[in-house]
Image 1 (cartoon, one colour):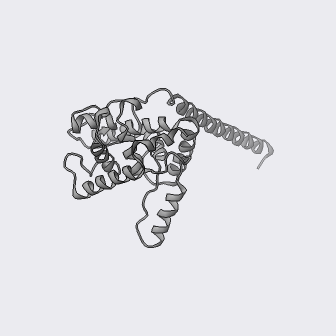
Image 2: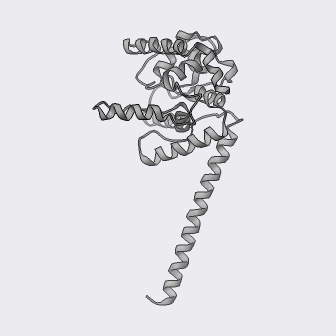
Image 3: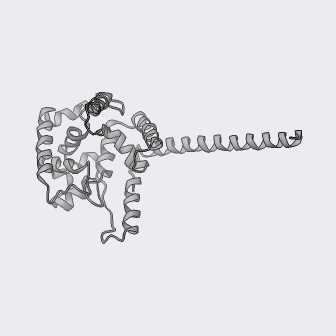
Length: 244
């Protein structure tokens, strides 16, 4: 290959590498800026809401409207954050986004022949629901870990819970405790009882199949288990650990 063509090729490769580096740095800066911004600004939507909306339009579902109404943490019954911690992530006040104890238990159970269960923390679920797409690819998992660390670094535990309670799906196209409590119980979320909060928490793992209005025996058992866990943790006093 002539020297001129070689030098041109090197220049092109350098330009491509510089462009890739700029794009990469731009994505990093944008993600950090977005997480910082959401420390104070309440999200008007989330990645999972957008995905549900697109899916509804594509499949011509009757109900295409998303139910979503923001409520501040102080305007939500403390039974609700306690119930999701009891159900989803009992070490939430103490870990830094990853519960390695639960991950270890999940892997042990898998080694014994059981199906590999999820061990996602509340922070990981916020990262996925707010910024990413559904799926189990290594790319998504890597991005989830990245956003989880950012969120833990930049937000308080209370803020993580506040956003989680507002964007988590609790029924088909029903997002957040504000919409769910009004649709299912005809009350604002500050009036939720421990039993109602536990029922909402019980459907979170699969809100498209698990029903609040017609709970199956499994959901009722799960609701009862969550109530027992809430009591075992010490009731709403357990939330004081968020500020330690």
